[in-house]
Amino acid sequence: MCQQFRKDFRKLLENKSWEEYYKAFCEEYSNRRNSDGCFLYKIHAGIPDEIKQVRGTYVDPRLINYIAMWASPKYCIAVGKIMDSIDKKVHEKLDEEELEDTVENAKPLFEQEVRKMREKQLEHERELCYGYRDSPFELDQWEQENLKREFREYELAKIALEAAEKKLKAWGSFCTKIL
Image 1 (cartoon, one colour):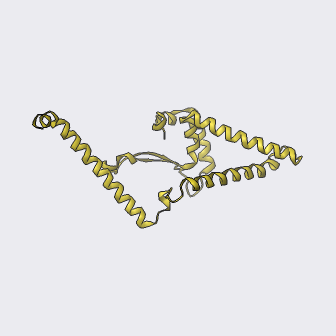
Image 2 (cartoon, rainbow, N blue to C red):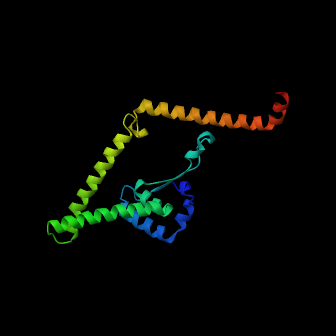
Image 3 (cartoon, helix red, strand yellow):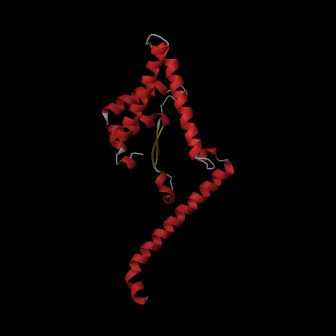
């Protein structure tokens, strides 16, 4: 994700506000079973060269929002607009029902608005993805194995093509003279 927005993830890890956020995150989400708070996963060693693009640092899904906001100001603005629209709807309902503006009164309304938005989003995704698998995790065991095998075959074919292109470049002037 960071490469997509031309950001260096290592710079985020050195950022003071990230360190504060990550510390608070670990305190909130670590438990006795997961006391080390392993929310960043580095995968470098043991990955074959033909699938080297899977190497890198993976993060807990709950950290994605913060990283995306750091990587893309447009994402941050979009999230802000969504939160503002939810806040506006919650306050309108509080005014309609003549309830006091407190967390206890706002929380159920907030959750209701988020649920509505989520249902609309899921409905929209179903329309877009009708007839397609939109997640490799929904595949059964054999389909996942076939997908992995085909992915490896594709990667190996890509490597073979790159090697052939290099040979063609090296022999290019010779080939054009003969043809």
